Image (cartoon, rainbow, N blue to C red; front, side, top):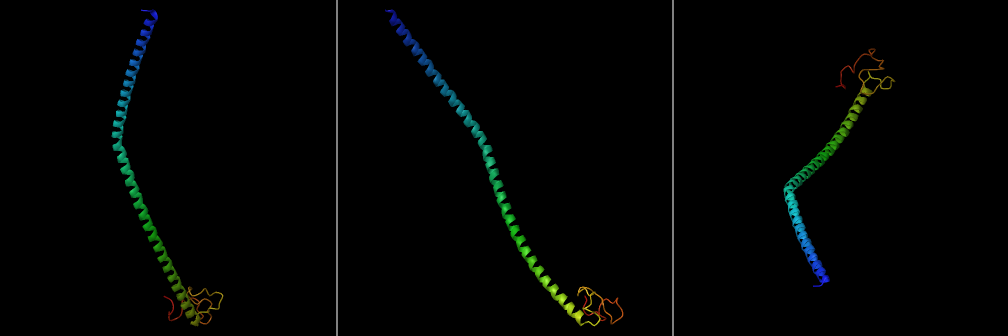
Length: 150
């Protein structure tokens, strides 16, 4: 057998061995990757429970936030209603105060013991006969019959 033929056979055998080793290595690498993927899936399955709990907790918190917003909106509406009611009551009270003051002013103008033209006259809220010169008694707290002060 010629020498070159021996080298060709040796080359073919070496190439075949290298191919067998490469195929075996690739097969082992695939198996390793398959095992690693399985381990990752197992870890993911274990973590899925925690993820589901966190999702449930997040949904619960979102529901609580929505309820709190609804409650805040309800309270805001109630506050606006009360503010409007208070404003209406304030206007009514102011109107009644004006009527009351006008009534007292009319009484002061009619009362001969009250001088409404005097510079010392402080309006119907004040009691007494400031500036009155007809009675001679400047300490009187109102008309003698007490008719217009409550």
